[in-house]
Amino acid sequence: MNAAEVPGQPAAGSGGRTSPPGTSPPVLTLTLNPTVDICCDVDHLVGVGKTRARVRYVAAGGGGINVARGVARFGGQATAVHTAGQEIGRRLNRLSDEEGIDHLALGIAGETREAFVLFETESLRSYHIVPGGPRLDDDEARRCLDLLERAAGAHRYIVASGSLPGGLPEDFYTAVARRVREAGSRVVLDTSGPALRESLHEAVFLRRCNRSEASYLVGRAVRTCDDARAVNEQLLAAGAAEVAITTLEELGALCSTGQGHMELRTVERAGRGQLCCRQRLSSLRS
Image 1 (cartoon, rainbow, N blue to C red):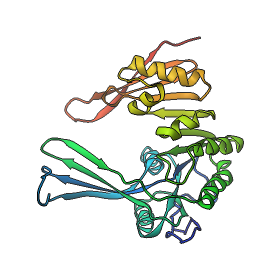
Image 2: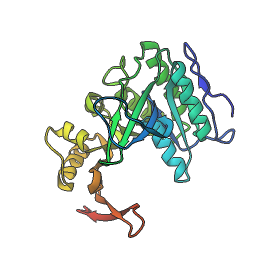
Image 3: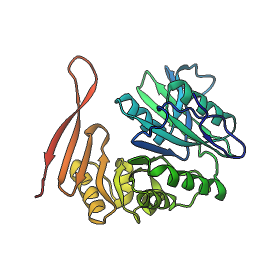
């Protein structure tokens, strides 16, 4: 693979490119605060002494990297742009290369974070332990925006997904959306907390919220499809998105546009224990 790192101080290793030379995948993803995900299985957690664990996998992680992985698994093409710093950043790049993820690494001074997922087999509970991650300085923030601005025109969709690292202003995704839109690409945004609220000042093509993020936005619990519909309609009416999606865990998700709503419900396939989607159109407007 050819090296494809946008230099920073210090450099974080090389990011591999797997797209054919001269081509640009239609999707570019942005992960400002990626992780190296370490997933382990344990029989049960003990309060005193050691809990013996079995490592299930170690992989590059973070919102946009996961999106790029998913696009590739469905047969599409995507390039993941992400920060990478210090030793864990080099490991992140190596894991991405080994998996064949098409990616560009933006070198930063701080060290990339590691996240831990523990699955307790006896209780079927999982625990996701995520440190805050590095802080980006003003120069690193500017380089992120400049890189996106240069790359945006060559990609139809820019998917910004995940939390903001320390040091970035809460309205950073607003600046991302503005620059990408001006370059002629469509923005898909999936974030949380103050960054989500501040981003509402700039229109994007698609916004995705999970149940807790939607509850945060409207200040009340979002439990049902009717609750999700109210959230989505609020986003559409405010001009914050052309498409609004609220996910509802085991209930599925609700996708809304100006033409109506589509419920996506999870259904277990008989005898296989897998999940598929059953679509149902509702409240279509002319």
